[in-house]
Amino acid sequence: MDSGPPGPVDSAPLVIDAPAGDDPGRQKECTFVRSGVRVTRMTVDTETRPLLAARHARAAVAVLFFTNGALFANLLPRYPQIKEDLAIGNGAYGLAVAAFPAGAVTAGLAAGVLVRRMGSARVAVLGTLLTGAGILAAGVAPSVALFATALFLAGAMDALTDVAQNAHGLRVQRLYGRSILNSFHAIWSIGAVTGGLMAAGAMSLDLSLGVHLTVSAVVLVAAAVAALRFCLPGPDSEPEEAGPERSEAEGARGTERAPGAEEARRAERALGAEGARGTSRVGFVLAALVLIATAGTLVEDAGNSWAALYLGDALHASAALAAWGFIALVGAQFIGRIIGDRLVDRFGQRAVARSGGLITAVGMGLALAVPTLPGTVLGFALAGFGVATLVPAAMHEADALPGLKPGSGLTLVSWLMRLGFLLSPPIVGQVADAAGLRTGLLVIPAAGVLVVLLAGVLRARRG
Image 1 (cartoon, helix red, strand yellow):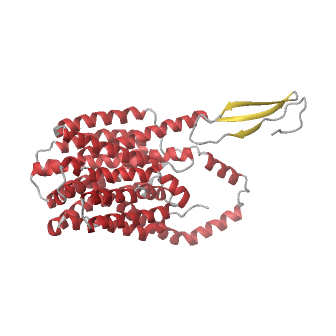
Image 2 (cartoon, one colour; image 1 turned 90 degrees about the vertical axis):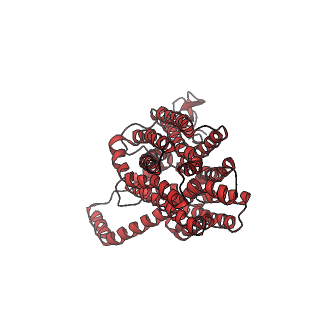
Image 3 (cartoon, helix red, strand yellow; image 1 turned 135 degrees about the vertical axis):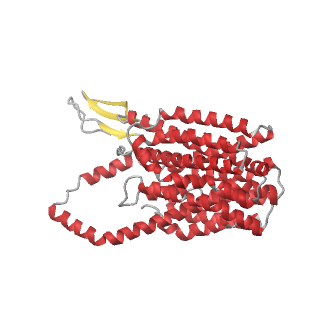
């Protein structure tokens, strides 16, 4: 395609973009006319350097999510052994493991302040280090009180890590200009599966809790520290350079005429009239987003705290086989998250969340109605797949709510959703002591029904 008739005078280059994809080193084909000869050559995109930095940062954030998922997952399959060693019942056990989310709720609101002062990457890595130390202390604790105290500290540090790594992931997502947050949570699920498999392998080798958790903490913390140098520089308050899609949209808006003084005054009056109604709407949406995220965490906690116990005690599975309830849940959750970005882009957050809630309710409901070992493992898998996108969806929507300071919506949802982790263990434990663990696990299909009812606050498909 020529830019004009051939001639001795050089014409301006005609640029034809190559497909962008994810390649930060993409090239452009430049065609121009020089001395009557049509010349085509490939030139490196001028955005290579910033996009290469974004790609490195995306890999670094993926490492942070992986290590965060793997750390705690190394401890979870050892819970039945810890419960037996400490000689406690279901009720006391439920209260003890609730210390982890209690610590998270206590420390969660401090995350936003620390991220603004230290930067999200540094907070995430420091939180990973301290979470690993807390998990190790919980694994070797000689009493229920020390076990709960160590879990409380580990939960507090995990909350800081969670907010910080999601904040940094959102920075990277803004550079890409499209949804990539679900892929980070998919990497978290890979880490959780890896951690569960590490724990199952350690149990098969009869490794002590101290040896097992020391090795896992050293390896995973070292990976997080190595990832720090590839994270995005600068404070988190700085706006990121927009990705290609956003840049085009903002460029188009920039060509429009700016409103005059009279138009600005009219807009201000309109905003004043709508202010109270808008605030009420934001409050309702934020509360619904918290409940959606909490429903996701309720299901996750069922796999974390109770899957191994239910398979071992109620269905008489061996310790190594009982670990597969948790592994199935987080493995299916990984699949849901790895395809989640494509599903959300095609069908919208609302449709994906509603379908997931239905899958969770029906899948785990049938598994509890007809309890078999394969059916229950499948039920946990369907529950994990169904809630795969809920937490990323709630965080994304909360971070974009109008009228809130940057990061405030994300911090609130991340903090309050941990109520699911906090309330689930003692409630399920008390119900299990009174009516059996099978009845207590009805919180999983109930959470699925809640998501179906509240998914309307999420965005429908664009366009």
